[in-house]
Figure 1 (spheres, helix red, strand yellow):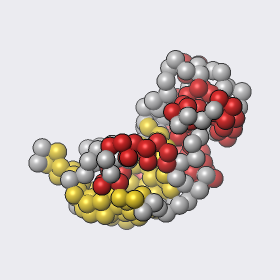
Figure 2 (tube, rainbow, N blue to C red):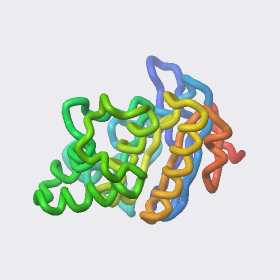
Figure 3 (cartoon, helix red, strand yellow):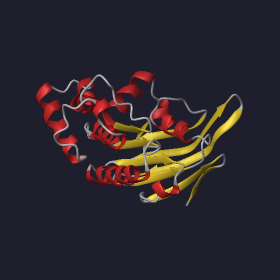
Length: 218
């Protein structure tokens, strides 16, 4: 499903990613472990087509993303990718249901479909009955559950998670990691988790360490 080949990136002449190669199939959940500053977020941004690579290719469903223009990458990303971030990025002025349904609204789903699908995903992450709650009424763990539901509501084929438990305590982190794995598997998506935590990485099927020289299996 996802094929990354010899990906390279520099900032100001300083190598950040060096010859990164990786394949991820449908239903696989893969961890990329690395310290801060090693290029984990940069790797996800390049995979998502948000940032250009200096060398190498990223192919998704046999489409070479690195050869697409900005508009084509935006369409592919909107229709196929789901994102979970460390900082949640839940919009404070929208209810839980409105936040979860936002990706479908951007894809012009009708109101009834948005309501049904968002309510289903909210229940699947353990927040049934909280559809009309505002983000300020939720804990950090609950906010990340909202973010997971939002990432999956559009039935993405690829889920990208960037340090999704970085702002959570140990127990909430454990619950969110288990939920994220469960949901990625249940939806048959390919998933990539980038993290500095080997404990978080242990919830994945395959684990790699990211260094300036590329990816090495753990």
